[in-house]
Image 1 (spheres, rainbow, N blue to C red):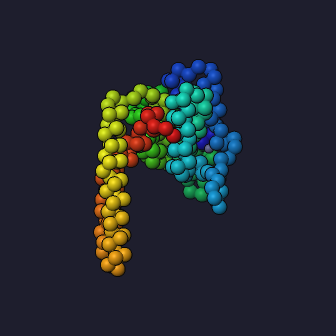
Image 2 (cartoon, rainbow, N blue to C red):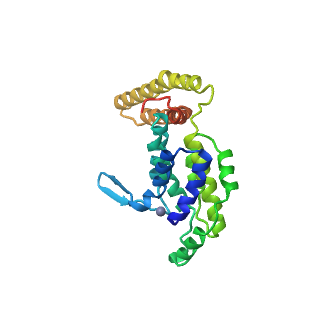
Image 3 (cartoon, rainbow, N blue to C red):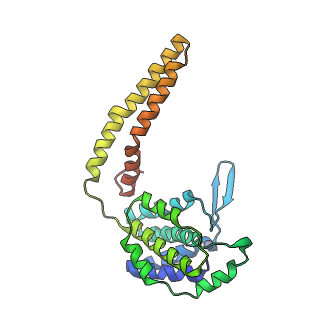
Length: 246
Ligand SMILES: [Zn+2]
């Protein structure tokens, strides 16, 4: 997607969020930043360029989390910068490259001439949930489109919904209590059950020289792990709302 398109979608979102000049600049800088400096992901033994049309979810979610944490810490400049970067990838992801990229340039040119549909931006600000699952799902649902109007509508709607989800800092009621009770069963029931069954299974298997106790213990642990899933999901939701140390 061309800079012009990223910027015009960004301006429409900045207007909806009623951003002051400083935050607006940080946001619009962020939204073109991935094209200015090609981002690389580095790790032990690997390094690759981030694809704009097919970015890995992890890379985009990294910016999403950076943005969210910055907002929670009242660092709105950094927050809007990372929000802009995340939206850049969502918008590029909406654009189909076409066969061998042949129709790509013409389409991008045509796209840059389109007006931003305010209706799609407004709809995004209404239809969102402030949770990491919602953002991750929105990313997944941003599929490459061929028709320029579809590209524009999707890029605007998804960008607006994700922007609304990340900047909404209201905490759902009852979250703290729910988290506390799940944490208690995690610590007092699930962890001891797993450690205990593995210890017993391992020592019985060793004593009898028979694999069955150990296999049984592994199965029990997997069931417990499955039952502990709500805790792990809620744990992420708690970090999203700043209820956990990072
Ligand atoms: Zn790009």
